[in-house]
Image (cartoon, rainbow, N blue to C red; front, side, top):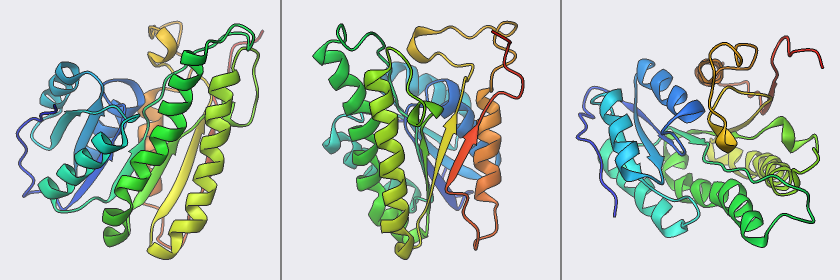
Length: 243
């Protein structure tokens, strides 16, 4: 069961659907898009949390509980979004999890959770949104990682999911451009978020990419000339600490 905040959709003419947006990058992107004139649907697996966040964002935000591992749930929420706002212009595929450990110790359940969320969940979300994005000539952003090209010890599931997401994103770009849909994969390095149980610290994480930086990047990409598509954007901290 899902529910949403009340939404006044009459004063905006563009909308975005953002997965994994109760905090961190997804939430920062939602704030930036609202400021840029979009109405947004934000999702999380936790209904109470996402409704509270949507209420804080204001009248142009809907908060819905949705597990991207469930394709029927994703389709239902995308359909509800289009019914509410009349259009879908931006899809920001952000929901992700990480379980890390030596491949000999990584459990099958941990593997499945990462792959089903980060990769299959991305496919389900994009698949559900293609009809509406085709009508609007919309834009898909996939939030990947530099771990999508750089393996790390203990990153078997996470690396595999992000390598796969990069490949999926590149194919989507080829398959969907004739429908007028743009696709950009954003590949950040270290970001100050709650990912994998981390608690952001303003002082200790000051050197990292901030969620607001990726939100600004997203808006900047949306304002690129129509003829130009940065299809892959790698983002790194300017000055990481010396090891």
